[in-house]
Image 1 (tube, protein in one colour):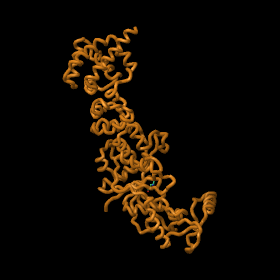
Image 2 (spheres, rainbow, N blue to C red):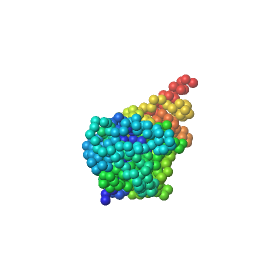
Image 3 (cartoon, rainbow, N blue to C red):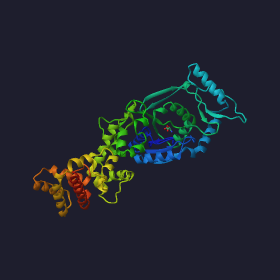
Image 4 (cartoon, protein in one colour):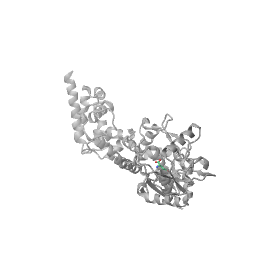
Length: 470
Ligand code: GLU
């Protein structure tokens, strides 16, 4: 039997990290079994579903690399199928028309709540003979009155509900649209889903769905209900904890590999291993090691993973992701080094791609002004001689490579009989505008000869102006 899993978001907002983790687990399980992963858009709530949210989900899934083998299927395109099956259940007397008014149902609920009972439909219309009339009605599923529904959840083990706890669920509304629990069941059946991996907020729907599946004569899939993600304060993860939408993590400068690795470890483990390549995740993932308890989101760990991937992934690949941030930060890349070389130079220090982009600006554009502290400290009249000599040597340099550039700075310091720092720091401030950069040879190489010389002149002018003002 081919394993088939699905991710079935309702398009009412962005792709939340909780949803993304469920999708990841579902995707990994399918991949780990050589199976298929289906994407289904549950858009039957027409009032709340938007095309924008559908696009956001597809964008988030694509960015995460969670590719689907089938779909996206849209429930709104399958209404005829749901209708046919509802009719079949009516014909077989496994469902019935309920004419109870909203007022009656509300009254009933209020009374039950006042008596401390769980609200449930009392079955008034359950045994009515079919009748011809123009009254508005809903269609309810005839839930068995006796016995119980049990399933062995891959995460939460054995779960059992007594049928007396379940009432006759509405499967078609007064406006003749089918309801969520019914559509899910039909889709899981038609799409031959073998494993339903979803959020634990759906546990209470599962016995109802199993009863409907049985009534339809459909096979029962296996279930895995994944716990919630909490913020670092123990409350349900929400916007006030920072980013919660997958695309917000992209905007904040995370690589999809980091978010994926972070999410897989959030609620699943394999010994004490923290770093997993995609191939390892696929090889090692099992539903049985998914944690029952909710997990708390920890941003520091995500940053740590992001740094790891910025440093270790192919710089050309990191550069592809960086490109978007360069554009977002309006960095004009018309002139300058290859972006992958910039990644190699700056990866060691960058926590996020946002940092990486902003600290790369001087490779492409003239800096606006010198960093005041660095200039005060290093662009002093005493530095003039060193800058002039190093500029001269750079001017004469015909082999613009790291080794030659390194030697050239060393020679300047030797000739002046000063430490490397006395040449290096003024030079660094001159060519980058600030006191921090990768090693000078790399920085000079990437900035290029022409620009480096112009910038040293700019620093000399700055020193001259400072002298004149004294
Ligand atoms: N559409 C449901 C949701 O977004 C998921 C249903 C399911 O996975 O069965 O919560």
